[in-house]
Length: 591
Image 1 (spheres, rainbow, N blue to C red):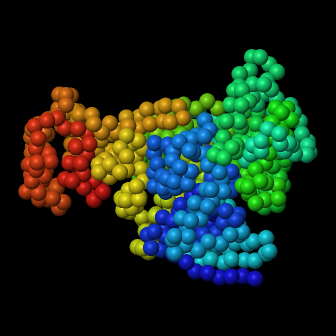
Image 2 (cartoon, rainbow, N blue to C red; image 1 turned 45 degrees about the horizontal axis):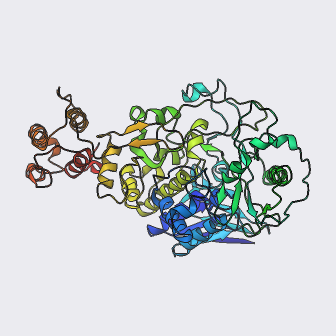
Image 3 (tube, one colour; image 1 turned 30 degrees about the vertical axis):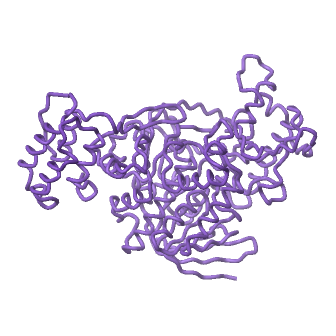
């Protein structure tokens, strides 16, 4: 049986990015069909049981911030979800699914179909116009749409559409990343079949049956009490369990040190082969559970019976860290993150992150030794979501156009949610203007995202409820005022320094960008309003013809002489950003 549908936007995958894309697009007034293989929404956040947020604690951008606020409301505030030391935000997976479903139910423009996986891409030459999906009963869902979004966990849709993609580690010669391997290979990051454990009380015995192929040697150094070699340092076992402690006395089992990470190159496998690989990973996690219950004596910790409605009480999905990576019109490399103001890709940012380059390769079949540099907070350019040689399709989740190395910081939940939200906004603009994703006006898209309280530059020291937020973001995206790059383990930063006084050097650099010519300034002391007005007057007189199509000379002077900007004190960077935003309107210029 085949059911045929037409819609404005088709989203394959209701995971962290897919549900975000659907909500954003629906709020922009377009019809969305969201197709999800599991019974839950949220993907790795919920259906895969990774309900401990990694990164972006001080960058609650867009729907990620909205989702976090709903978690706070549900549990009773931020302290109520700061239960484990791996994260500032931890929650029960079923609560995340409940929240996402309520958010989706509030949007009449969204139709959701559960239990279907993508089977075939509909395309005409190099244009995608929909897809077919199949469920376990063999029923077909055939959907036609002018714009589709691949938000699958593995990048299956883009592969079925014959999009070019990368898989595994890139060679140094391809990416110019000095820390990439000499030669490319197909090794991807380890994945994890998580488990949610629950404390049933000290007198309870929840020990599971001994799993097949259980080998205690696999877990002997997972925590201090199990270490045989005194030269090996790991945390004590109680701290290991507290790593992913959730509200209501539950624990995520997602431990990377001799824990339940698992390796299989599942990406190119057929559906049945994948399921076999995931079944082996499930068994390995059960071995880890059994080890904790027996070797650690924690028989009171059993698989939670009030989380996943599955026969084995395990999640619907494994935690996938790496998938296919589309070849996009832009590819984000580690060099771009280390020096964003060199490449210029930051100007096209649609999502932000502050997580380090963190990879899991301990279980790979060969020894992989990777030593990556510390990075500052970063943004992801729009071109990473747009296939280079395919129209009608946007790519989200972990399949965006980044290098293998960069995947280590763009794969985390808050970043993936933002990527989905940006894809949904872009798709809605495509429908609104009847254009291809390649033709979306980046400044129009960015303004839509700013209005949705999304950070596009990772200036964590200017909040989205600050009246200066949008001017600072626009000026930052234009490069007129630059941020301070601060690599800081597990919470990298890019600071705008909003209350610092503007220096003559910064004013000079800004004017050089705006007027595109060399300016002689020898001072580098803070700038007063009087001196700034003089500098502005000089450049306005010299360049009024360049600005005539944007503002009249009278308008410029009225802004400069207004009480807001004509004080005798020193100028802060925020005040300068607001002034430049008002005068030059950077999103309506070539800046």
